[in-house]
Length: 90
Image 1 (tube, helix red, strand yellow):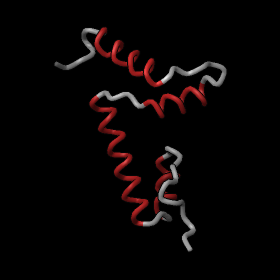
Image 2 (cartoon, one colour):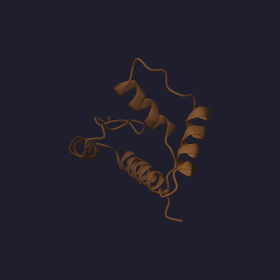
Image 3 (cartoon, one colour):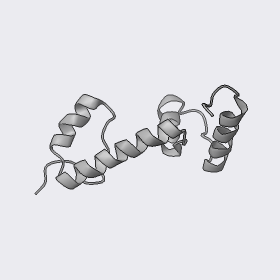
């Protein structure tokens, strides 16, 4: 008899809305959401590209364009990462 989002529910990305939705989530769903957010931040910090986020961005911002497939996306991200000489710390 849960009135909140299910464990697999995604939140909006808006901190205020997410906080309100998180309050109504089950404890397990809140833990899962927190782990997903931490993993997302860590991936961004170390520079791991996120294909699902790219697809969401392309659907919202450029619906008329065909997104890259996963292999081409990874190849482009790696090329971009290693062809810019001052973009890395080491």
